[in-house]
Image 1 (spheres, each protein chain N blue to C red):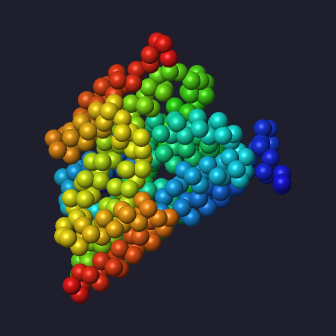
Image 2: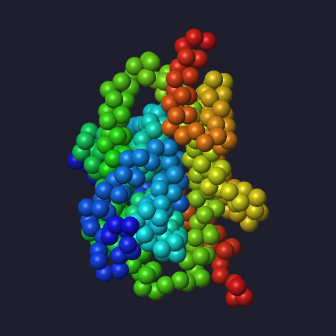
Image 3: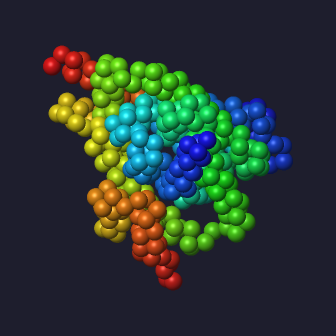
Length: 174
Length: 188
């Protein structure tokens, strides 16, 4: 029970800190999960990567973390605590907005948060890179994937799956 | 044009249609780009929002914490059918991916220590890292070329990743600075 409460507190906090989208909280999530629930960085990155194959909003992988820590109940707790607080906040702010209309400060806040969230995404990329790029082969796979995603119209899901297959062949036979 | 395609001013959008449409987006949006799917649904396919309304809600979604796609579903759902609509749209959007993720997650947790699983995942994780770099690069867009943006981006990164401060502290330091830098000017 205490574990479920700390799980809810952890993801509820992350929900409200997710400026500019879920990717911004990756480094914080990684740290909190390692300290409070003993999920090491490699496992976190594996779960994160699996989540990228799924359709829908990109941070649904948090459900796997909840499932890993406390089974289906854990997944449910994480789902509610990660999506409910930010959604309720957005709901009420949306209504207030409709009521009061535009203000120059809204533009200011959005402009100010944009570069912050880009900086946080860069931190998220750095954390994922530290745990996932561990050898020349994984570095090569990451760079090739980056190239394919930026320069071609191939769906990233196929790039990720392809990298899993290609990487397995390389690591197993070379 | 069927009756459901006409912008609804007094005739309401049905809750079941709202659910089904967001559920479809949640189920087919493999590989990201979910905001684009929502844009097509809300503006082009169903005419539920005007382009202006959509941009307004998108701006709020991006300013508020939380996932932009979910926030947008909440706002559009509220616009169409009030609080119930907001819940239904968000649940529809999240449900397919949640079931998908739980199924593969259960398979992963059952095979965590299987040597082949960790080899496959090392390739998957490397590609996910490539994907995340690509997304960060793209979302950054013009910001990478503007000194003013870089003056926020770089310190944020350094405080988070190098100084290893916690996220609330980083936000407490950077948000006031950034808001000051982008404050409304009297002449604009």
